[in-house]
Length: 348
Image (cartoon, rainbow, N blue to C red; front, side, top):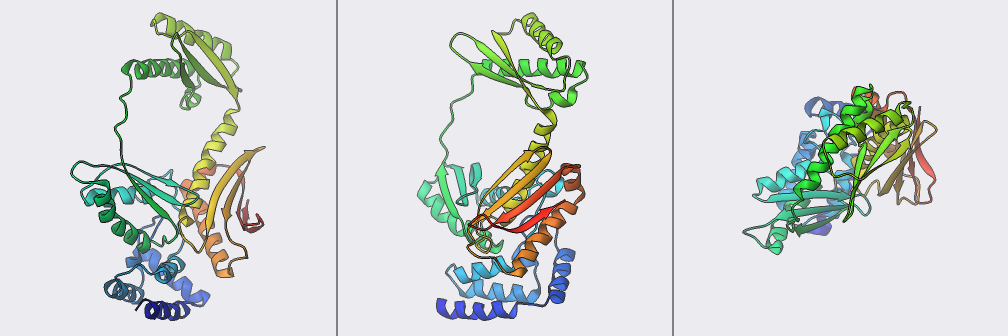
């Protein structure tokens, strides 16, 4: 039965190889009938593909690697900005939380490790054992992933252990000093800078030391630190010393912006064997942002795959919220073969 279905889907895969004009029409129909999300569901495709896939789901009790590969090929890439309302509750982790909660489970956390693509699920179990929960949930999770084109991943389910409670005075002290830092920075006209994490607490048995990151363009840094120290003393807070680190504020802001962008591009293709992603890295150097998406591909992929990737990235950068995020940054995006030779390069 499995061999027969694999053969049928091999034939179907050949039939689904369309001319560019036909693919464009199909893409437009999909976009007209679905909301934009990172992972489009197979149910939003043409009735022919839907009927065929439904038939296989009914007739086939096993998970077919051929079917998963086919799904990955016909589901277009959609890169959703993680820094906009468009992403709200549409990313994979949010959808999995929703799925598990609908099954009656309390989720402690869900995390994704990029390489090897691993979905780590932590559950709070009361009336079930870990084995029972795993046996119950894994088929449902795999079915959801399969419907959304994921066919290269690992799933790890664990039971959450109760974390030790935070010491109230630690949190209170940190929040009090953070508030002082924000107020003093704002009083000098640097409220925007104070929105960043400008204070860190180092504890010891005998004292507490705060570290303040000071943007290097601030001329009144000495006065600001003096005012912070006075306010800490006036509130009789248990702080022995303040250490100051300087940094390039604009570089940090650009670095923060591109952390989201690099992640968005990677996540749209990760966990799908057709792209064979193995990792992502980025850096900002002299105002130019570089993103490298690494793959395990030994040879150049087909022109169709390259065009699909390029189109998805270009559509992502054309979104108003993405334009606002990148501002006027110069950038270079590259997808690399296993030997680190680029096969996609997009730059402005």
